[in-house]
Length: 285
Ligand code: MN
Image (tube, rainbow, N blue to C red; front, side, top):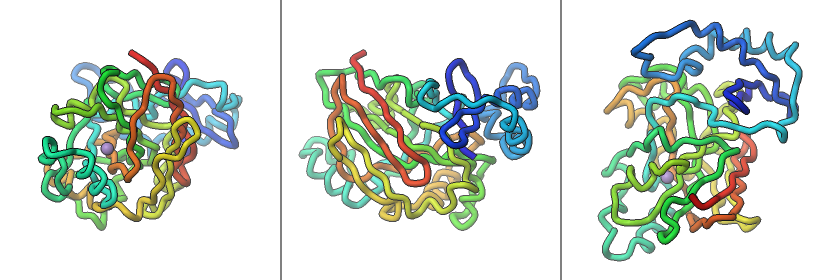
């Protein structure tokens, strides 16, 4: 299944380029009071909802994708977990770029571990990335993103993909400078997820996906997930050794080489095989 959130918090099933509004199935998730669960309700309930989603889509009229406004496919992630330099060529590029002052930021993922991005930074494809510090360099990072489907605590890499609900294109936007990664990558709008989620059963094996990113039509990043230093199952094993991954938590798997600056007015076109294409605009604050 391809699922999207669109317009005013509608839930859609995408088939043949049409978005079928199946928001009514969310009524099956039940009513919650304070404190709310620490997971995303849709992803926690997705397997139970699946037959109802498919049944509802049969009668729901379709709207062309081009006519909807796409929100983040995860509304309430508890965590945005992200992998720092997780492709060898990007590690080399980052070391060259960092100069002597920032070398301490560029270490192998096996020694520095993962970082978290603020959930308040998350947007969908139809909102613009708003550059908060235009006098500093802001970079695009194209990444395969996985959405967790069930609680994962100390799971092994061999079982890890059983905990994934689906996949999205992720953009981990970064402002350069001396602050901690988690701060520089948590600016409002600096995490883009979309354009929709492709469920794990439909995508299949995430370990051999071509991806590319263009800025204003020029190719900047072109890679394949087979070149990840730590694969997605290894990232899930690593992360879940430290903290429980909950349904709706998102894992940004790291960016390949070719990161580069973006400025207001730019158009980013991102592609990952078996997920699709996502266009995002860059604007001033
Ligand atoms: Mn990144």
